[in-house]
Image 1 (cartoon, rainbow, N blue to C red):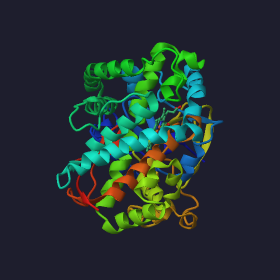
Image 2: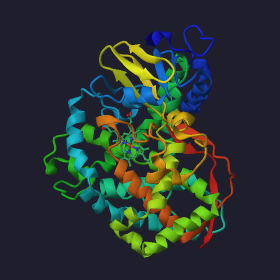
Image 3: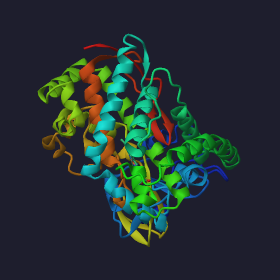
Image 4: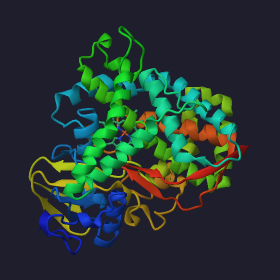
Length: 452
Ligand code: HEM
């Protein structure tokens, strides 16, 4: 048995900043994945704030999933978000924070099937508006990330808060998505910069946070006595919830961040692969036609019939898990199993970053074609070929993604509607480059659309 401190490290640590010099603040998680490819599936990294273990190893990631000995840890960019932007919202609250338990109890029912049914209309209307917008721009280059953010922010505004940002109107200029992207880029860079620079970035972030918090305060003002089934109504006193007013604002901004960027990034990845593969587009259309065509998308139950479209979303989240890593902390002295070192002794409070981006491309568990986009990997029969795989795009345990079904439903609906309405052509090539702003997001991805 070896100790955690005996695990490999990359060579050449610098005084004070440790391994931080290796991390590109504009693409930190992708830098960490590049280091993992050289150093191995489990290693130590010294990131100025302390040492973390970075894992792409399936055995290690499965070991740290055990809730008795491990728990979520709010670190890196999430800590910056807690301090500067969303306080004690669900995503960034400490495990021990009673507000997390209260908010979780109030909001969980907002993601069950009955609630999902009630959001379908809002999602469908927003997707239809996107298609109208794109029909008017046929033949023009469309910036995919911008428009996917417009769509997902509109969906969360309508389904989550019963309001609209008019984000899909051709005339309204709603800067929320741009403001949000800029703030998240700053938070990601602040968490991965040398200490002095990090403080400057935090000051810049504090400025960028102000308009976002103003929008969240506006959104959080529900008419007194409102009793609809939005996420916001569930949090308000009229529903019996007891969340403090300032926490409701934090939760609204949390949903605007967590529910918007991630789904938008995933849709961008799906569109990249569809735009580069006309046969896959045809297959998506055939599937939609067999389920009743575009009109059938107005019906909630159609979405679960679109199995291929769902596999495209699943595979997009494997190859490019837009939330590319999550942190776990050891609650006590413990051990983990590993592929290369057998059992490893882990002291209490050790922090492990599960690098989903690496685990999802691990050739030992996913096979030699792990770097290829192959949606049929997700048929039940094919999945059996990867018994030891780690697939965790939505995290793990009680702090895993509350919005998982919301995101998957929205993504399948949007992809089916877009492919069912248009021929989508790639204009930015077959290589996908990802920007990082805590989440991953296609960079400079453009397509053109034409009539089907
Ligand atoms: C493809 C889309 C999405 C992905 C990949 C994703 C991924 C994740 C991951 C990995 C976590 C865990 C983070 C951690 O352990 O530190 C998380 C948490 C969370 N997500 Fe998502 N998410 C997505 C969409 C959404 C949507 C649509 C919503 C809301 C409408 C949402 C709301 C949240 C919230 C509130 C949390 C914190 C849960 C808690 O700690 O109680 N997410 N998400």
